[in-house]
Length: 141
Image (cartoon, rainbow, N blue to C red):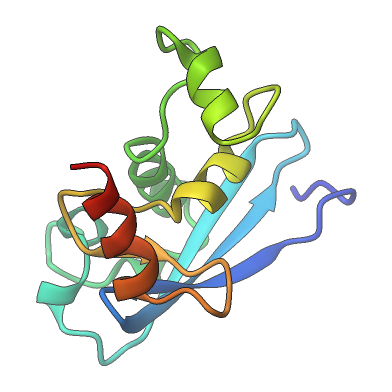
């Protein structure tokens, strides 16, 4: 059940510089973010996160509205965001210009990127893999 005060948002889901799907962010009636993913049907299996394949190696988009689908996407997001109870989370919030924990604001800042793979969410039209994601991780060395 959607929260009518939050307008669902859809963004390109990227592998390096290629759009491989679209992630939609909504909010349930309890104020918790919900994520769903529509992968582009011709996307090669080796260009999507392994967690997004079911045991039969079918694309997760086939069960988009299921609880299983939403929990897989939620887990993937949570792996890319520090938890609210993490030690020194206040300092991390300051680094992303937040006064309180907001998962969506954090992933918009980080683009849900990880230095361990090439998947990310393109929240802003001018973002590119080279100029946004690679530069950010190169600056951390």
